[in-house]
Amino acid sequence: MRKTSSTSHVALVTGANQGIGAATARALAARGVAVLCTYLRPHGPGEGDAADPYHAARSIDGEEIAGQIRRAGGRAEAFEADLGDPAVPGRLFDLAEDRLGPVDILVNNASGWIQDPFTPDPADRFDRPLRPVTDPDEVAKTIVFLASDEAALITGNVITLR
Image (cartoon, rainbow, N blue to C red; front, side, top):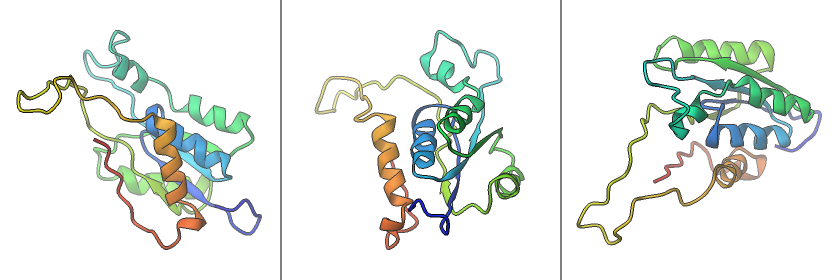
């Protein structure tokens, strides 16, 4: 991802309205990558409850992240999309190409994960709930490296966080 006029990259980042997706979109943009920030806000009953930090964070409009990127001098678009619809991924690639150029970086960060408190199993070594081991900006650094020209020999990576 060298910042040269002859090399420009376009990324499609799903789940880019909060957490790892937002951090990754901002980090890629800081390296000169144009970013389509896709997201899906909760719309069902009980979803988006401000009392629930996970759903409150998911309720952020992806335009906030795209706006931050543009204000910092980058190129970004935001689009709300339900990836549960099989026709949507193709449309997202078309949209990205129309507005930003051909996509050459895909960060498939969206999930259907529903927050549930982790309860330690009595057989667990530690008698405490599981917790994240890092923050979104640290994960974004790894993703940015894997999408860089410097990592050209490393392709098709899946990063699983536990």
